[in-house]
Length: 413
Image (cartoon, rainbow, N blue to C red; front, side, top):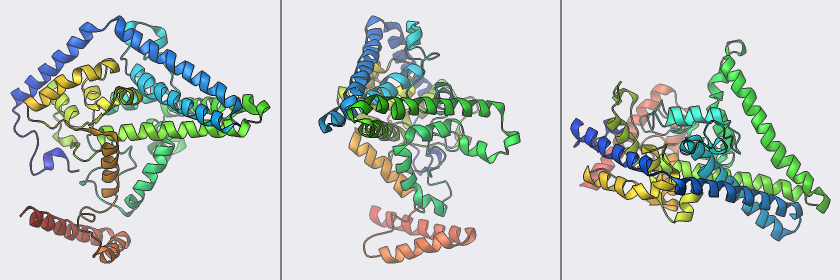
C-alpha cells in the first residue's frame, strides 16, 4: 500500500478540519454512552468468560492424562487450544487494556493480570497499548505494522531479503507468542547493542521474559505430560500441548493480521501526522487504519472481539462485549462522512492480508506485470534485481514501476 498522503486520491481529501472534529465529537458521544451504561451485565460477562475458560482448560488437561487414546487426544487438544485462545484473546488482551478496571476487582485488573503467553504483561502493555494504539499504522513508528521484520508498504525500499518474508511470516505465525515476546523486548536492536551499553531496563525485561517462558514451558511440556505418564500418555500429552500452542499462535496471528494488513487498509507517513494531533484526527487514523471481520457471535468471542478491530481501535478501553452494540453506530458515521468501513469474512481478510505480504515481498510492480506467458523473463528480471548492486536495482525498479503504471493506464482506458 502507498501511504495515504501519497495516493493519487486521498480518501480524506473531502473532509474539512471542522468535519474531522465533528466526527470526533460524535465518536466521543458513543464512547461516553457506553461508559455511562456499564454495569452488572458487563461484569457478569467477563466473570463468566474467565470461569468458562478455566474449567475448559482444567477439563482438557484432565482428558490429556489419558491421551494415549486417540479420541481423548483429539478432545483434549481441541479443548486446550480453545481455552488458550479464549485466555489470550477475549480475556488477557482485553483485561490488560483496562477494559474491566472500573469493576475494581483485583482478580480482573490490568495491573494484576498475567496471561498464558511468552510475553510479560508489562512488556506487552508498553509495546501494544502505549505504542501501537498511539501510532497506529504509521510506517516506521508502529512496529505492529510488520513487527519490524516485513516490508508493509510500497514506499519502503525493496531488498532481496524480502523475498523470504512469506516464509518467515508463516514461521512467525506458528511461534507467534515468542515473536511477540522478542518484539516487546526490541530484541534485534538490543542484541546489536554491545553488552556493556545495554540498558538495565532491557536486562531486567529480558530476565523476566525468560522466567515467564520457563514457567509456561514447565507447565505445558513437563508437568502436564509427567502427570500423564502413568497411563503411557507422556508423549501424547506433550504433543497435545505443543499442538494447542501452535493452534493458538496461528489463530492469534491470523486475527491480528486481519485487523491492519488487508489490502485497502491505510498506512500513514510520520511527517504527515500533526505534532499536536487532535482527538478527531486520531480517531480518523484509527478508522482508516483498521479492518473488521464479519461473522457469528461465537467467532467474535474467539477473536477477543478483535473482529471489531475498528471499534476496538476507536475505543480500546470499552468492554469488548460492547463492540457489536456500537458497530452499527460507528458504521453510520463512516457513511455520513464518506469513508470506507473495511469489513469482510475471515477467509477473505486472511487471504487479503497474505496477498499483501506476498505482493510486497517482490519489487513494486513485479506481480502486476507478470503472467503465465512472460513468467520466465520475469523470473530472470527478478534474479537480476536480486544480484544487482543498489544503483542498478533502483534503475530496474523504476523501469518495472513504469511498466506497471502503463499496464494500469491501459486497463483503465
